[in-house]
Image (tube, rainbow, N blue to C red; front, top):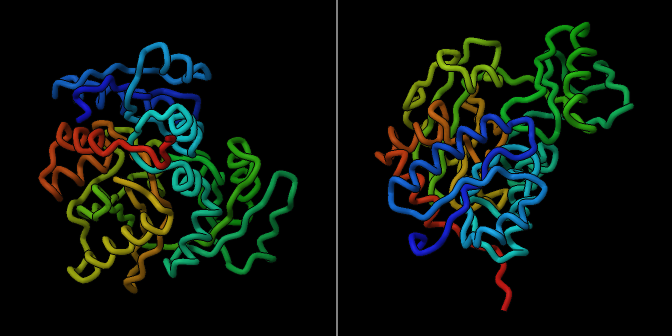
Length: 308
């Protein structure tokens, strides 16, 4: 159906993840054109509504990451303009992007997530008052790609970690550090398609490890016993559903030695670069090439609401 429509690939944007989005969007655009779709790349700015109208865009492939793209803002604009788009709707996108509310939704659904406390700028973070001990993880509430995240193993490291996190957001999250295998579950067409294990060269799977070739080892399938592997996939699907996500996502987990699966976050617009994990999981777990993945995603473009 989408081959009869003019598709706008939304990329770039205004967030700290702009450069990654440019790469994701360029790869998606090439794949769509190669498959015979009428697609143009649109670098998203504050004039997006005018550009969409001027170009006559009839469907949107959202290849944005971070704020103003992954958080429900662009989704709301597209709903208002009645332009079908890929990925989750407004509410699910906003929930997934906001770590505090997504963790509350996970907990309400019986999904394990690390204990945490949230702080606004100006509030004192006193480690002895936390219900959990060092080490801690400090992160902005609304950023992706591990932007602004630190692991605090000693109290003297806390001030720098808070300063970094508050550089990106007025609200930050301090959570208990969970030691475990970094496992990411791919969701496509609202079903799990495999779990990949990440072994970063850095202390954790940070921005550099995610987007620099050679900075992380990818192991597919994740090195888990069969029952635990299936459990990880089902926990990933449960997290996807708990937020009301649609179509596809990538769910980040920590799997402990005791077999517990802690959900870190759900990525409603996972990366689509050469180093991105969802395309790798799709290819190795479901036999879906990058081009086929892009086609399946664009063909699922929809609106959450329709105006009569």
